[in-house]
Length: 262
Ligand SMILES: Nc1ncnc2c1ncn2[C@@H]1O[C@H](COP(=O)(O)OP(=O)(O)O)[C@@H](O)[C@H]1O
Ligand SMILES: Cc1ncc(COP(=O)(O)OP(=O)(O)O)c(N)n1
Image (cartoon, rainbow, N blue to C red; front, side, top):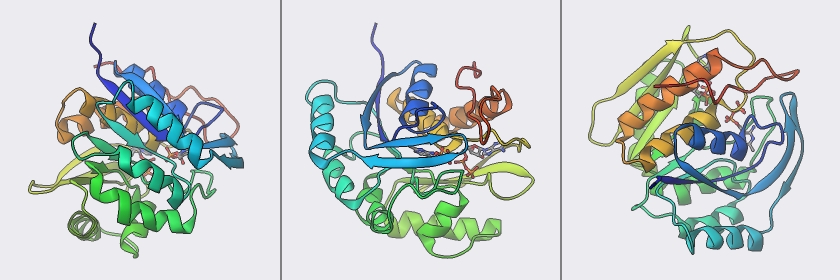
């Protein structure tokens, strides 16, 4: 049986809610064969981040070569990339020929920083031009354009700036942080804006929502879906996953990767 393949390049979460663990669960839930390259080992749980140990650059490259020499992925997703040096190692493995979803992870829900200042800028200048889709939440989009975004018009303007000045094919700005609903705004070069809205659930269990959403989109792109089709599945998946969260942990609990069925 032939399966689509997807690779995540990201950090870990030993409690399984975010990072590589959430990505692999999401790939599997969407029927895609998942592979994973670890960038940082993160001692974290639903209450916060306790310690971070970055993988050496040699080991990072060795993992990437092991994957690409054997099973080149049909889509790639990046999450936590802690330093600019790590991005320099990863960049040669990314190509515009393979769909690439960049989740510009900067800070965990707990408020802990996951990547350093130089890395934030390098993400924009070096990796973003290669991305098929970039998936910032509102604070990440604000960092990208360097100003506060409070209205829909602000979001439109920021998205056009990201597309024209930073070079990805598409950007989706996730609005979980503003408004009464959870509305996400997708902008694909040369196409009309599209939005997806779901009810905003009043729950603390949103750990790993960004990881899960972007991983599902990468899985759908690996199957050959269009960006808009992939986002539609991502939105339906994450909405159900939050709604049906398993209520685990003492802080911001994880979502349910097994709840969504088409
Ligand atoms: N409380 C919530 N209820 C419903 N959907 C949510 C909620 N929080 C986030 N989402 C959705 O989950 C997806 C991932 O969002 P995330 O990266 O966490 O962004 P944000 O930080 O803006 O919430 C988006 O589709 C977002 O709209
Ligand atoms: C290793 C690792 N990567 C990313 C995150 C952030 O997860 P994300 O889904 O963006 O959002 P929250 O977990 O902050 O909801 C993480 N915590 N750990």
